[in-house]
Image (cartoon, rainbow, N blue to C red; front, top):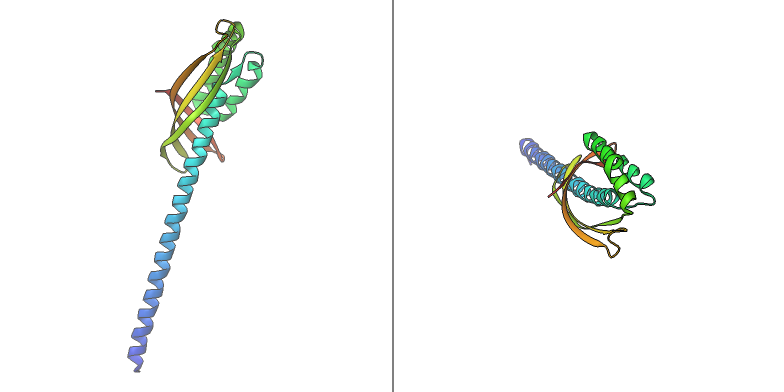
Length: 162
């Protein structure tokens, strides 16, 4: 084999190796991105369900300690607004009417998701009992939750009934 032919074969082999390395790297990157997006969707959905159940479940006997804890899972102006609402109306109203509310996220699905932002739609059922409604009532709701990832935690930035 001539020297020129060896150089050409070596160059072709090097080019094929480089192309395979690039293709492998791109495939790994796509796989990694897909896994991260899948994990973000799962984590955001779990956070939305957990947060809504905590926001909309309470017992008039322990509401003073239950609902203020929920604020740790909220962020921004929504956090401030929720704090004002629970302090100004929900807590006093629940105590006056002796309400017990149990919320259950029946189903949830991701509308959109990125590594640090997600929108989740949740189907929420609430069973409410109180001194005026001893048999209880069931309320079904659809709720859109906007979440942002902050310091490794998914926090609700907006909760909107649909």
